[in-house]
Length: 170
Image 1 (cartoon, rainbow, N blue to C red):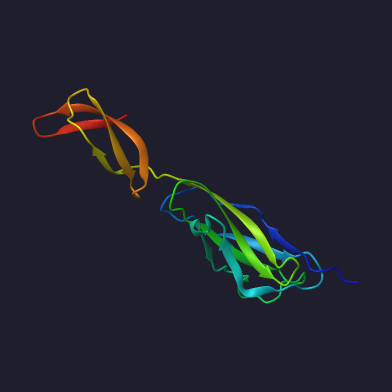
Image 2: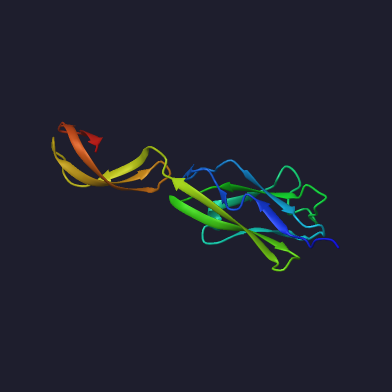
Protein backbone atom coordinates (compact mmCIF):
# COMPACT_ATOMS: atom_id res chain seq x y z
CA UNK A 1 0.00 0.00 0.00
CA UNK A 2 1.28 3.45 -0.95
CA UNK A 3 1.60 6.26 1.60
CA UNK A 4 -0.97 9.05 1.15
CA UNK A 5 0.22 12.43 -0.13
CA UNK A 6 1.67 14.81 2.45
CA UNK A 7 2.39 18.52 1.94
CA UNK A 8 5.88 19.44 3.12
CA UNK A 9 7.56 22.81 2.90
CA UNK A 10 10.97 24.20 3.76
CA UNK A 11 11.44 26.60 5.44
CA UNK A 12 8.31 27.21 7.48
CA UNK A 13 8.19 29.82 8.87
CA UNK A 14 10.22 31.88 6.40
CA UNK A 15 12.02 34.81 8.04
CA UNK A 16 12.97 37.46 5.51
CA UNK A 17 16.07 39.66 5.87
CA UNK A 18 15.59 43.02 7.60
CA UNK A 19 14.73 45.53 4.88
CA UNK A 20 14.53 49.33 4.81
CA UNK A 21 11.14 50.92 4.32
CA UNK A 22 10.69 51.66 0.62
CA UNK A 23 13.16 48.95 -0.47
CA UNK A 24 12.64 45.38 -1.66
CA UNK A 25 14.63 42.42 -0.35
CA UNK A 26 16.13 39.76 -2.56
CA UNK A 27 13.67 37.04 -3.51
CA UNK A 28 13.78 33.89 -1.37
CA UNK A 29 12.60 30.44 -2.45
CA UNK A 30 10.25 28.22 -0.50
CA UNK A 31 10.46 24.56 -1.52
CA UNK A 32 7.24 22.52 -1.54
CA UNK A 33 7.53 18.73 -1.69
CA UNK A 34 5.38 15.67 -1.20
CA UNK A 35 6.60 13.38 1.57
CA UNK A 36 3.99 10.76 0.58
CA UNK A 37 3.95 8.34 -2.34
CA UNK A 38 0.64 9.37 -3.94
CA UNK A 39 0.46 12.72 -5.78
CA UNK A 40 -1.42 15.82 -4.72
CA UNK A 41 -2.34 18.82 -6.83
CA UNK A 42 -1.75 22.51 -6.25
CA UNK A 43 -4.56 24.38 -8.02
CA UNK A 44 -3.48 26.46 -11.02
CA UNK A 45 -2.84 29.99 -9.72
CA UNK A 46 -3.45 28.53 -6.27
CA UNK A 47 -0.57 30.34 -4.56
CA UNK A 48 -1.35 33.69 -2.94
CA UNK A 49 -0.44 36.02 -0.08
CA UNK A 50 -2.90 36.53 2.78
CA UNK A 51 -2.92 38.19 6.19
CA UNK A 52 -2.82 41.70 7.62
CA UNK A 53 0.61 42.49 6.14
CA UNK A 54 0.22 40.65 2.81
CA UNK A 55 0.83 43.90 0.93
CA UNK A 56 4.29 44.12 2.55
CA UNK A 57 5.42 40.98 0.66
CA UNK A 58 5.56 40.13 -3.05
CA UNK A 59 5.27 36.80 -4.84
CA UNK A 60 7.64 36.30 -7.74
CA UNK A 61 8.12 33.57 -10.33
CA UNK A 62 10.54 30.86 -9.29
CA UNK A 63 13.38 30.06 -11.66
CA UNK A 64 12.83 26.30 -11.33
CA UNK A 65 9.39 24.62 -11.28
CA UNK A 66 7.16 27.42 -9.97
CA UNK A 67 4.24 26.13 -7.88
CA UNK A 68 1.68 28.21 -9.81
CA UNK A 69 2.38 26.33 -13.05
CA UNK A 70 2.82 22.76 -11.81
CA UNK A 71 -0.17 20.41 -11.69
CA UNK A 72 1.01 17.60 -9.42
CA UNK A 73 3.76 17.49 -6.82
CA UNK A 74 4.90 13.92 -6.25
CA UNK A 75 7.61 12.17 -4.29
CA UNK A 76 9.24 11.27 -7.62
CA UNK A 77 9.80 14.93 -8.59
CA UNK A 78 11.82 17.70 -7.02
CA UNK A 79 8.60 19.43 -5.96
CA UNK A 80 7.95 23.08 -6.78
CA UNK A 81 9.01 26.48 -5.54
CA UNK A 82 7.28 29.66 -4.40
CA UNK A 83 9.39 32.82 -4.51
CA UNK A 84 8.78 35.74 -2.16
CA UNK A 85 10.32 39.16 -1.45
CA UNK A 86 9.80 41.58 1.43
CA UNK A 87 8.88 45.14 0.34
CA UNK A 88 7.79 47.10 3.43
CA UNK A 89 6.03 50.44 3.22
CA UNK A 90 6.09 51.10 6.98
CA UNK A 91 8.50 50.22 9.79
CA UNK A 92 8.24 47.40 12.30
CA UNK A 93 7.59 43.66 12.41
CA UNK A 94 5.44 42.26 9.59
CA UNK A 95 3.76 38.88 9.14
CA UNK A 96 1.81 37.32 6.28
CA UNK A 97 1.00 33.88 4.96
CA UNK A 98 1.62 32.18 1.64
CA UNK A 99 -1.45 30.11 0.94
CA UNK A 100 -1.39 27.02 -1.31
CA UNK A 101 -4.76 25.70 -2.55
CA UNK A 102 -4.48 21.92 -2.94
CA UNK A 103 -6.65 18.83 -3.30
CA UNK A 104 -5.53 17.66 0.16
CA UNK A 105 -7.61 17.71 3.33
CA UNK A 106 -7.46 20.44 4.50
CA UNK A 107 -7.26 22.04 1.06
CA UNK A 108 -5.42 25.17 2.25
CA UNK A 109 -1.76 24.66 3.17
CA UNK A 110 0.22 27.64 4.52
CA UNK A 111 3.68 29.04 5.13
CA UNK A 112 4.19 31.87 7.64
CA UNK A 113 6.27 34.84 6.48
CA UNK A 114 7.98 37.29 8.83
CA UNK A 115 10.03 40.39 8.20
CA UNK A 116 11.37 43.40 10.06
CA UNK A 117 11.14 46.76 8.29
CA UNK A 118 13.76 49.31 9.29
CA UNK A 119 13.84 53.07 8.79
CA UNK A 120 16.53 54.13 6.31
CA UNK A 121 19.24 56.52 7.44
CA UNK A 122 18.95 60.17 6.53
CA UNK A 123 16.44 62.95 6.98
CA UNK A 124 14.47 63.92 3.92
CA UNK A 125 12.74 67.00 5.33
CA UNK A 126 12.25 68.77 8.64
CA UNK A 127 9.96 71.47 9.96
CA UNK A 128 10.74 73.56 13.04
CA UNK A 129 8.43 76.20 14.46
CA UNK A 130 9.39 79.11 16.69
CA UNK A 131 12.15 81.69 16.67
CA UNK A 132 15.64 80.21 16.98
CA UNK A 133 18.36 81.85 19.03
CA UNK A 134 21.90 80.61 19.66
CA UNK A 135 21.86 77.83 22.24
CA UNK A 136 18.07 77.45 22.27
CA UNK A 137 16.44 74.08 21.65
CA UNK A 138 13.29 73.73 19.61
CA UNK A 139 11.25 70.64 18.83
CA UNK A 140 10.55 69.77 15.24
CA UNK A 141 8.99 67.17 13.01
CA UNK A 142 11.05 65.30 10.43
CA UNK A 143 10.54 62.72 7.72
CA UNK A 144 13.13 60.21 6.53
CA UNK A 145 14.20 59.97 2.91
CA UNK A 146 11.10 57.87 2.09
CA UNK A 147 8.68 60.35 3.71
CA UNK A 148 8.16 58.16 6.80
CA UNK A 149 7.74 60.28 9.98
CA UNK A 150 10.67 60.21 12.41
CA UNK A 151 9.74 60.56 16.09
CA UNK A 152 10.24 63.96 17.73
CA UNK A 153 13.69 65.42 17.15
CA UNK A 154 15.36 68.17 19.18
CA UNK A 155 17.45 70.79 17.42
CA UNK A 156 20.21 72.88 19.03
CA UNK A 157 21.02 76.08 17.20
CA UNK A 158 24.76 76.53 16.65
CA UNK A 159 24.88 79.90 14.94
CA UNK A 160 22.37 82.57 13.96
CA UNK A 161 22.84 85.59 11.73
CA UNK A 162 20.17 88.07 10.79
CA UNK A 163 19.14 85.84 7.89
CA UNK A 164 19.78 82.16 8.76
CA UNK A 165 20.58 79.77 11.60
CA UNK A 166 22.60 76.55 11.44
CA UNK A 167 21.68 73.64 13.62
CA UNK A 168 22.72 70.23 14.88
CA UNK A 169 20.21 67.45 15.46
CA UNK A 170 20.40 66.04 19.00
